Image 1 (tube, each protein chain N blue to C red):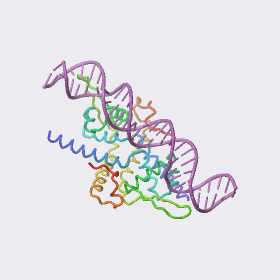
Image 2 (cartoon, rainbow over the protein chains, first blue to last red):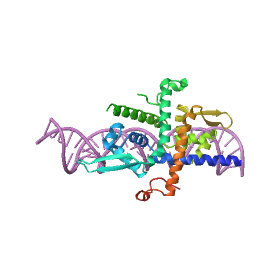
Image 3 (cartoon, each protein chain N blue to C red):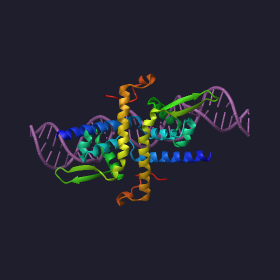
Length: 132
Length: 132
DNA sequence: CATGTCACTATACAAAAGGATACCGGTATC
DNA sequence: GATACCGGTATCCTTTTGTATAGTGACATG
């Protein structure tokens, strides 16, 4: 009973931590956006081209939120016309392990589905992952 | 130029992998739900109590999706009234690294915000993370 | 002189996700 | 008899997310 209490407390702490993490990284775009900046700073349009189905409105919103959380910085150069580059911060490096784990899982999961080594009943379902 | 081409290809692969991962783990609840099952199988109402602000409708939908992706199994016992337990699968263990990274980041990020070792301009913003 | 680029913003709208509340039939408890 | 638990479903509503389209102003290209 005492043990159970401690274990549920730990469990709640873990859930809280995970929910805190998801709170700042929510949505479809934040992590892909960070990944696209890992290989070097980029301009607005470059990012838009790389994440091809994002609209400027959404991109601009996501970038603002990442800026507020100190994962990216926005730098404006007064060339003509102005160029704006987005760059990852030092702090964003604390996401490296997370991103690597996500990447590894994503890759592995896709292979599993393409390979078809899954239970038959579920194979029929086409909504599990969209493979192009 | 050749180098750049290779590097953008790798980058695109990474973005794709990350997006695949996010596709099956989307939304506010899937990962917290899995975390709540790590310490052992649970019944529907138990999970609902643990993730306290989830509604039964959403919980039932999330559990169904996790079942389709083979992260949890649903077992019905014909006691009176019936009891239903949800349990993590073997396959779900491939999420362990990811969950640990998410937990570590979430904890670290919360401490950073509570500690207040952030730039002043951003300190004013209250929307960064809800700390209760 | 028409057209296109850049980094967006604005407006309007549609779709999806999530939340609030009520309800079911059966059992157990008070 | 009233209430509560169980594992959900049904209905409605709000919030979030995404789409489509147009426009800005200064310049560069044809």
